[in-house]
Amino acid sequence: MTLIAMISAKGSPGVSTAALAFTLTWPAPVLLAECDPAGGDLLAGYLARYELPPDRGVLPLASSALRGTADQDLTGNLIDLDAPRQQRMALPGLTEPAQSASLNLAWTALGEFFSRMTTRTVLADCGRLAAAHPPWSLLAQADLVLLTLRAHSLRTVSPAVSALSALRRQLPEGFVQQHVGLLLIGGGIASREISRHLGAPVVASLPWDPQTAAALCGDGRGRRRAPLMRHGAAAYDAVTERIAAQRMDSALSRRDTEQLPVTL
Ligand SMILES: Nc1ncnc2c1ncn2[C@@H]1O[C@H](COP(=O)(O)OP(=O)(O)O)[C@@H](O)[C@H]1O
Ligand SMILES: [Mg+2]
Image 1: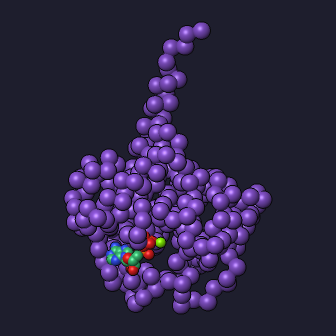
Image 2 (image 1 turned 90 degrees about the vertical axis):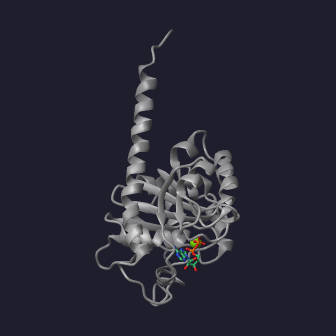
Image 3 (image 1 turned 180 degrees about the horizontal axis):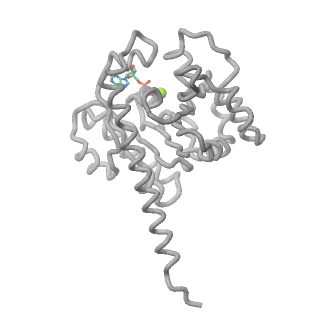
């Protein structure tokens, strides 16, 4: 179906919070995959009040993907955030950042597995690019990479410049132009200014909403109609339209290439 990877340049602009807000509000079956090499947040945050089996998550699923058994082993590694409906599933992340080196070999296989999944939109929280071992080969398979940043000031926006350069260096030629968009958190600099400055489109924006963000980190209670959740739900259309437009573009450019006269 669709693989959407979410990253930040550096700092903590709110990638995990945004990914969870999307997972809890989008009108389609979603899998939130915690692929942050620095470790996952769900088990110690939003899910901290539940007693959950410790043996499931991205690490055992990565081994399954390398063995070719991820299809069979997927469900056993997930947590149903909306039990028993299985509409909003989560794949818990690493519990120790030291485990991330062992995932390096598996990002390609995991990315292939996620992008082959026909029943769900996969939201992969890939953490920050400035960390050790970013999951490049998973990012390269995403339909959309959402580079998340706070819109507050030049200080919060400018790290995205070097993040975009790193993405251009590490990912296939043309990938960034076609598959990378911005997700803005909070107000400050106008989105068209940010888009112009960074040379990338703003796909969606989420409001600054500390109470709901804290609830999504497991601290206090949030409201379904809170600004962060309403805008999270609204981002679904923006994101799916963006992906549909990209697919249309690449279908058209494939057709143009096929129609070029062939000289022998
Ligand atoms: N939209 C938001 N409004 C207010 N606070 C937020 C928002 N998003 C995140 N936060 C807060 O910022 C901190 C970092 O968020 P987190 O999602 O863990 O960032 P990241 O995944 O980018 O490291 C948390 O304390 C969280 O509650
Ligand atoms: Mg995070």
